[in-house]
Image 1 (cartoon, rainbow, N blue to C red):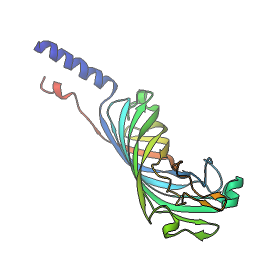
Image 2: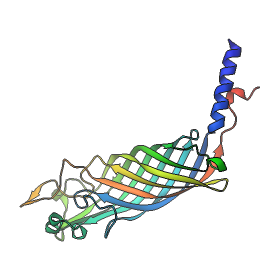
Image 3: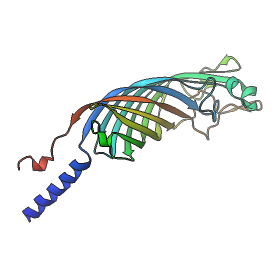
Image 4: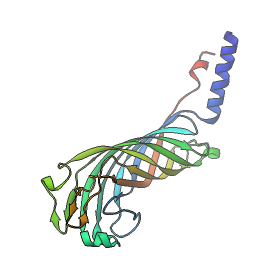
Length: 238
């Protein structure tokens, strides 16, 4: 019985070590963020769409296929009807901007075996999903008239939970560094990111309470490998 257990542990650990030791990474992030909602319903690249985002990332690799990741990001989201080539937007002439801070927790899946410092496992596309907790503080106006107090659907500050998902790609830089690029979509739990009230103003629908806002953060992550976990604990005494 004991012999069978030891053989099973040895086989399991050998298999795990053959395709992925646990390791941790830490580094900075920088990229681009933009908003999708009533003011910008569909434009991903264009005039007035996108601003700088920056932050930090911690990744814990469970093996060569799976990893857990924590991000902290800071950005400024903005949009204006005048920049949108839509008749409705040109009639409403709303605009907003907000500082946004988020903390995300994600799980990653690598399509190819990946490990920092191993030439044969130095590249992989991946998918990630998880959740983000974010803080925002919009300043909005319609036709040049700033919305304040009860003209808005919220107080001066807000926060919420968003569902996060997207693709990425990662590659080794030497034996200790990894460079990744990812495009992450955040579906928020609120329609108040842009500060527009969910009501009609004469013939115009200012906001849509049935259509929550989104924001997107894409960019680069440069991480440094902090640790490698050693041999299987069950085998350290043999």
